[in-house]
Image (cartoon, rainbow, N blue to C red; front, side, top):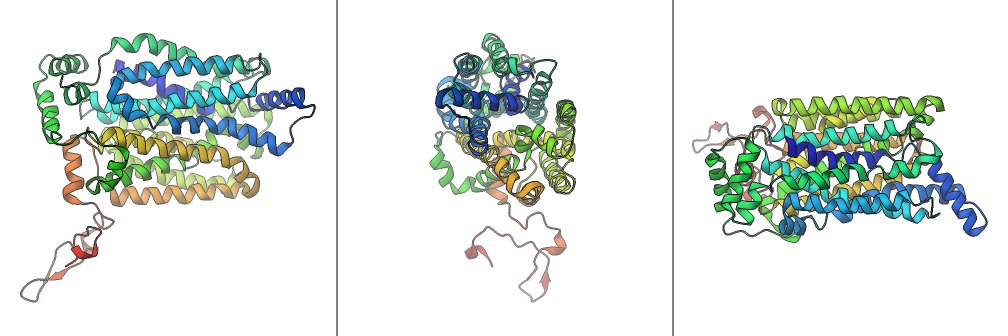
Amino acid sequence: LAVTLLSSFGSSMLYGFNLAVVNSPAVHIKAFYNATWYQRYGQGLAQGPLTLMYSLTVSIFALGGFVGSFPVGILVTQYGRNGTLIRSNFLVLLAGMLMGFSRYLGSPEMVILGRFIIGIHSGICLSVVPMYLGEIAPKNHRGFLGLVPSIFICLGVFSAQVLGLPELLGEDAYWPLFLSVVVVPAFLQLLLLSWFPESPRYLLIEKNNVHGAAEALSLFLGQHNVQDTIAEIEEEKRSLASVKAVSVWQLLSDHSVRFQVLSVVVINMGMQLSGIDAIWFYTNAIFENAGIPDPDIPYTTVGTGAIEVVAGLIGCFTIEKVGRRSLLIVGFCFMGICCAGITLTLTNLLGTECSLSLTAGVPFLMTAELFKQSHRPSAYIVGGSLNWLSNFTVGFVFPFLQMSAGAFSYLVFCVICFLVALYVYFMIPETKNKTFVEISHFFTSSRPTFFSNLPDSFKMVKLNGYGALENSSLEFSGSISNLP
């Protein structure tokens, strides 16, 4: 639990903080850009170029995350899960310095570069943290510990909203300090995380360090007798004896994991294309368009953040009861309904953020659960890169989409949410209380299809050898040659 809290505090909370940190000082940052442009070229920026420059500032964080997701496989193999998290904190310290001194040096480029660098950090950590937690957690607590980072993401968003109030750091004089606050949790994680051991699965399977794995398990599980868990990891190791860690290209070319890869693609892209990033990035502008008085907008924004934290806690404490699959289906359906409601009223942001917070950490958790050790790093590269690319797309395009389509822009998000919910219902199994080997065996033996979750009354029947109808399910494998 201590490792979960510390790794989530320094990584997931930073991610959430940087999603929302540019929302409150948006007016001040734009004014700084305009003033700097005037000093350099003798004229200010027009509305279009200014919107473009600010959209780049917002969305380049996601572009950095996209870049940071690619070296994850190499980093976790070379330095381990914990070692990668420790080293990534130096990126935050560098980014904080760039953003903190940007106005003093009159350089908007330092703000944009700082956002890009801290995006790289988040791209690395958002893949490594759930991988680390998924490997150290007992299977009956994997869902709970896997969703703890989502709570810290919500807390990061909430803390950015609170610090952005006019009474704190929301004034024009303080926005560089506001952007550089990220160095505080990074520094604490850098100091404390080195006291905790590496992932036992990494030590045993990839480094063949049985003694180190046993010591790590004893610390994580709080017991000396860890032979059962060692035996489970040894079983996974034996199943991977003839299989080396696969590259991204090998992962995409491996037909035995095509359903797992497709599922990771759908749920990771679906989470970002649900519209929640647009709300996080541009909350104040959306509330302004909804007609809320300007003095009340910061406090209304804080209210949405508080709702997110509560919803995240609900999701964390219910995931082991309701399961991952049910939480995803309910969350995406509710988000779709709320996006439709936003189109009608432009005020239903609370329900949208609440529904996302229920499911925010599930895609990262399921990426760890759907793959064995040999495929897991590459799976995180695929899921993480698409997650960040979708994040960048929404952050960059949304202001222009909103200018052209207004409230109807949320209908796009509505359709995506319902399509993802349908995919999860028909294609993804429940992974609660399953070992990694059991989950992988399900995909290779059961071959989930669009028809596998339909009621029996809808499944096809065939004639037996005596010409009578025989009730039996017709298994579809996705190939016509396999049909009877």
